Image (tube, rainbow, N blue to C red; front, side, top):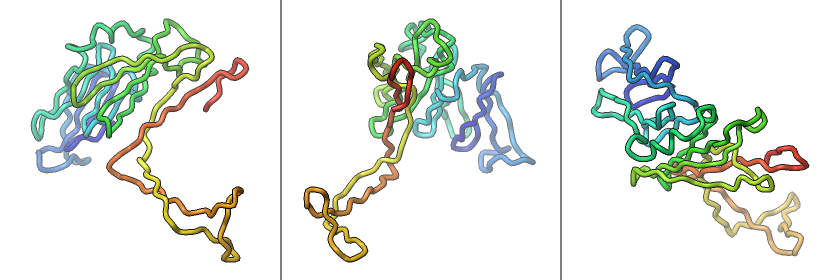
Length: 219
């Protein structure tokens, strides 16, 4: 499910559906709603769905798509890959599409999807990401991201957004229960630091694994 401005997009195995109210000036409710099929496309992975300024971008077997609003009441499904990187997209092994992970960097206005291009892999390696595909929202362009796939290097297995924090050093000294100024091991005075959350921005973090004695472990 994906919340749109005046409706709800439902990603199902038999296509993509739009649930709205009976009229443009009211939301849908249990006793009054309208259901319309937007497309026969099936989203290959829920983790491929990325919210870009209120519009869902997602991966299907045939390409990368967006549900775009054409007017206040109307939506349609448009291809982002058809005239850009379609030939590259169809080269990705089909069994790997279901393991793609996407994330949107609000500040840079870029979407990053991470996926694997191995012909086959075990269940223990299905979360391994060996390539990245970047979509620049402002330029409406794609470019590929190559990652080191050697055994001695960590590999990305996921990406996610976190609140953007700014750290500001204040000149307030830290005191203990005896009202004595707290010193660090070097004898320097300890000052407080405050993390300020910027609600308009998010920061992208990556989850990676590294090999340790032949076994993958989180880092």
